[in-house]
Length: 269
Image (cartoon, rainbow, N blue to C red):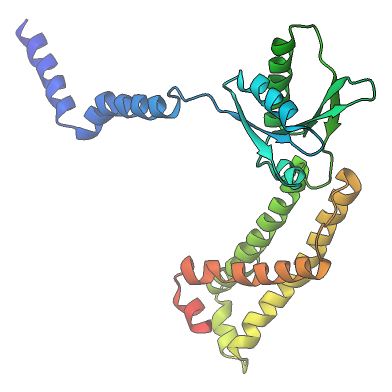
């Protein structure tokens, strides 16, 4: 048994003398357990924000409606004292808006405004309808459906501006900075320095050439978004064009000044 004991002892010594091995065997599982335990720990139930449209309704009716909805602790109720509740619903600051209307026969109808493209708004609508059903103890309640379907609230309306920003950033990094670094690698900067050129002309030529490719790229993306998904520009076209040009100019200097640590590039700048 002596050789078996000595070989086992040697393997044990080899293991604990390697800090990396000890870490991956004992430390790393503990770190994973802590990280995942914190990430997926029990969290309080998120409340749905609902505003009560007080216009056209009596204070007594609004108070009764608030009492019915307050029975569900998952609903956060507040009054829409101004007329900007549509703007808050469109921007996602609230999940639902509900008002009341009374017919000539005296029947009360709950007017619910939601945004069907947002899961939070759909969830808030289900909670509100469930609370109303429990309060009246009937199979149905008179509800008026109103969907906020204005342009600018869909996911694609947020996606296209993000793609524009990503393309501008990528064009600045790889269409300007990477080009200069590639010139340095191919020994082209030395040849340019030997010519009677100004450094400003060199940089402006690269940036202008990039803009000549960037503008058609933006036009193609915006035209496709308009034709395929009916995405339109809600602001000024000149402001959008100025933002694209300024953004491209800002991103153009990222890589040469922070990544390309080469003497030739710094001499050019």
